[in-house]
Image (spheres, helix red, strand yellow):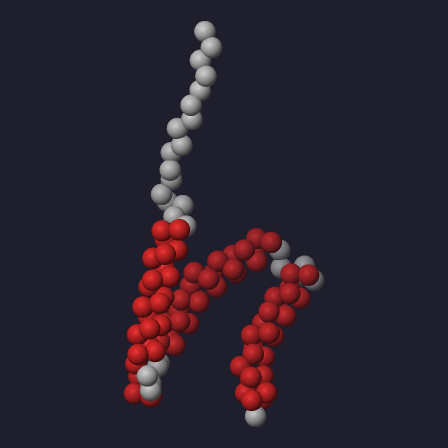
Length: 103
């Protein structure tokens, strides 16, 4: 029972990973195409999938709203910590270098 439900969940994921591996190793797609597909997936399709899953969620079946709030707050806190620890590349820090003047 548990094995079959786990297999139903994980088989599509592992089959897509395997398909990507075959495309990469078999040189069926060039590097530029793989880069463009990767960009499309992470910038368009993944956010769309997340939005659709949240939109289709039936909130009447949620048993524990405290778990839902904990998850939302945890994501926000992790995002804030990551923005502090790893500044975005748009915030370029100008490094002033000293020099020796020999005269």
